[in-house]
Amino acid sequence: MYISDDELLARVTKVLCSRRRESASPITLGSTFADLGLDSLDTLSLLFDTETEFGVTLPEAEAFSSRTIGCLLLLVRASLEAGEPVAADSVPSTLVVVA
Image 1 (cartoon, rainbow, N blue to C red):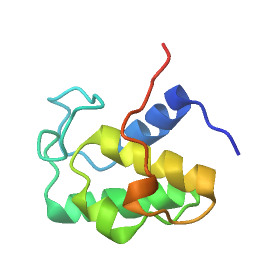
Image 2 (cartoon, rainbow, N blue to C red):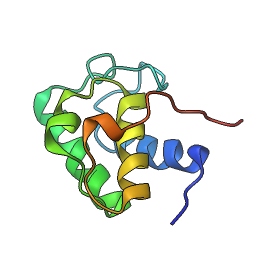
Image 3 (cartoon, helix red, strand yellow):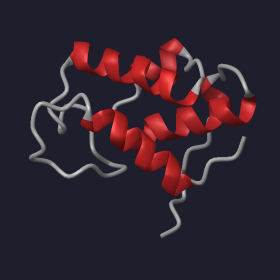
Image 4 (cartoon, rainbow, N blue to C red):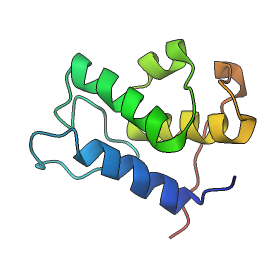
């Protein structure tokens, strides 16, 4: 199933917004979870909610080492394309968002 980069970002943003206590910082690809006010428990919940939203299983080591929204999107994209958890070395290093 193909999901455009814009839709991918919108859906992850929706999941993230359901977790945020405040909306002070705008959500960008470079936003870190800490920048967005997420502690470690919030981040864990975000990862689980993202897996549920997309019907994928994110690779644990890579998911827990993700620190930005862009990294999370790359993991989701790679998992969607592979149809299963993926190794870190198979995740692309860039994400192109077409406006």
